[in-house]
Each structure stands twice: as C-alpha cells, then as structure tokens.
Image (cartoon, rainbow, N blue to C red; front, side, top):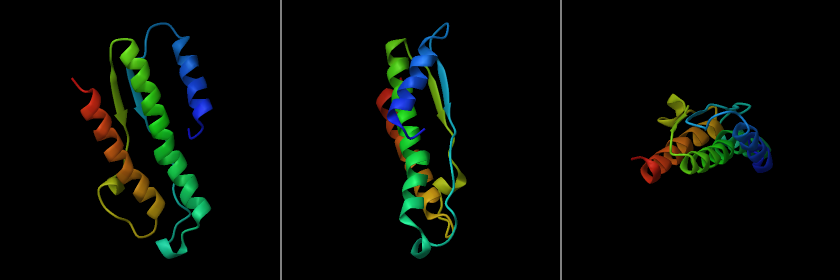
Length: 113
C-alpha cells in the first residue's frame, strides 16, 4: 500500500485484465499500538500514516489517472467514525482517518461531474 512502485505494479496488473477500471474501493488500514500522544512512538506513527493515509493517496491517485484515461468511474474510500472525532488511545489512526476525509473530498471536488 505505501510503496509507490508496488501500487504502480498493481495498476499495471489491473490494466492487463479485460475491460477498464470503473470502480475501486480503498479500504486498507492498520492501527496504532495504543496509548495517548505522549506515549506514541514516532516509528509507529509513521507506519500508521504511511499505510492508512499515504497508501490510500497512492491508490486513489493511480485509480483516478486510470479512470480519467478510460472514461471515468467511481471510487469509494472506507474511513472510520474516528475520521469525524478524536480518540485518546489511537492518535495516528485518528489523524489518518481525518486525513482520508479531506483527501477524498478534495478528489471529489476536482473530478466529480
């Protein structure tokens, strides 16, 4: 998810399938090890943000590019209630889910008909 080359390889494999990409669902996530922000390990923070936010960005970008080249489609990004509220014990996950909402809304504004 969080490796740009791997996402490109995945999209190359999708392009080899019959038809065109018309629908995609972004639904991968990992959670923090748990604990309030003062106890949050930076490596854990980066890993969660890398998968939960960067990974969805990479996939969403690739999906949009593919769909623009072939006439459009629909993309759903699965978030969490924690994208709308805070949670004391999973700060990285909560931050990533807030970011997903902004990311998807931004894409929707740019590409919706």
